Length: 422
Image 1 (cartoon, one colour):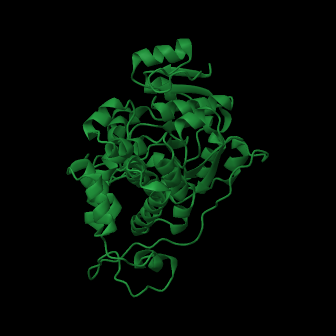
Image 2 (cartoon, rainbow, N blue to C red; image 1 turned 60 degrees about the horizontal axis):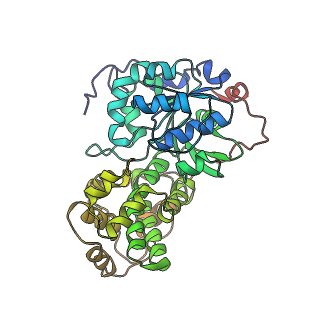
Image 3 (cartoon, rainbow, N blue to C red; image 1 turned 120 degrees about the vertical axis):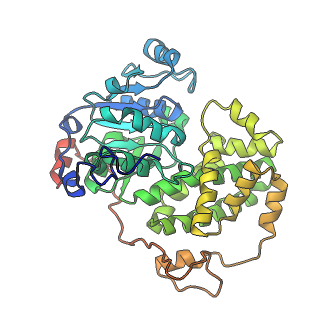
């Protein structure tokens, strides 16, 4: 990991901008007057987001490394590598230069896989604009550091950027977004005014973003649901039926809740779009890459063969490693996640994993960890988290953040939104 003492980084003791100074930085003028956006990452979701913005009349600069795909997008308006056959707007211009992509834009969307996210930031953060929303669209947890993309941005970027870091997460398949299917997601930022500004830029009648200030909850839910999608795909591949799939999803949600509340998430986030919404979609739709991994493993394929055949990243495979590290760090029971890890990395068969899960001792549906946070009396069962003396849990406030979305008929403009900025 990079040194926290580096004066150019966000968490260094001499980062150059205090939290108070960063909170008072005004938006860049382009964020209020320009319909121009940069999308950094030319995979399926980055391309779909580019088409979404172009559909709204925004000029989009799409950054990617692949020269052949850049040429195809600019000349034939198609991304043949990830979304073959999809006609892209002429408002989308692809480029291999991050500096060119972000010059003068109103908003930046980052759609780089989590495994490469830190490296990308370190390589290109010197050209990122200050004062415009930086919307992170990546879902995952970095191995070893156990940091989410938002946390990586806060760690690596100088303080002057921190107010403008935003997370976009929720149930959204790239193919459905690009084809204009109705989609709803969550936009989360620590600053409600910045969340509202970002919400304005991505929302239209077919793609609705709802605001939140619970960045932790939104990211944790979006990251670890991919692990449970692998489990759900395996259930379907083994023909365990609709009942089995429903049980897997619901108990998976319980495990997500345990980790989320320990990390400090608002428990109500788990019941929203970034939580149950994204979990249900990715566990039931065969467009989910993570579901496909589990399904193909259940049919006898080897993990390495499945990964090699997929053009796009299945984040759940890497996230399973991080999740196991978090299970040990927080001493928390996440049996489904543990079995997924053992299937992926220890050679355990899916049948053996299912037998391990079905042989567990019966217990209460809602465990004491979650009850404690939401204010319910703890039951007679043993707490899920084995807490040692002096190791308290970080509890989240139940004060709800602003949850209203910008409706299609609301008269919200960037210039009006800025009136609410402190």
